[in-house]
Image (cartoon, rainbow, N blue to C red):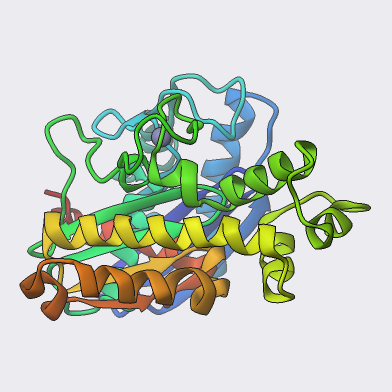
Length: 323
Ligand SMILES: [Zn+2]
């Protein structure tokens, strides 16, 4: 395998660890998929190292064949040190020293970066954003996150924390965010937020009969609210109308701040593209400054569940992608 550029990308999620070996054309050569263990620091680090070894073994690679390893993980983190500070989905793993542990054990170069940033790199190099140097990636699922590519590099800022798109404040003093602030994009428009608004409406006796009916016998998750709205339920429709309005405001802010050539939107809620995203994108383009609206395409992400692992491998192949 010598002569080819190959790297390993790890997507460390709250429920699974997906690791791939990938070449410079984006071809996946080997993979490993396991549930994320929740038994503390030692077990988590061991699982990460094992997943890298498995992915390499399944591709017939040894450490000399691989340019490097990168791990995409949820923040907050210190990416320079490669330490997860308080991983929200790994309780009991404060200050998890991923970089030093993996480098010591695997004898390979290891990087650690925010999962939404890594996903942005993935879509930029191998997904919908191929060839678009100025691109913003937004993921809309249980939370909202993103990453900003500027002239072909990931913008990280002085504190290495830039691109917290989901915590852009759109309505200060309104919905409380999991981050502790109020009115963040995530607090208004995430799947979790949609579910909370519906649960509040039912609990307060403000919901229309359709939504109350939908709430009986199942928990009121975002897909239930979407289904109720599609069937004409007025409370569900009112909840989603606010979500569409603020998705539009968020996208307009991105147009004004970055004037990207493309905004790529991924995540679970893009299944409701025509309901939640397309009308918001139209609104943003109609209401934004003309020039940034004219040059930007707003499109669906292409890499699906692979985006984190592909993005991490892309980062390991080309560390200069980081600004
Ligand atoms: Zn927030």
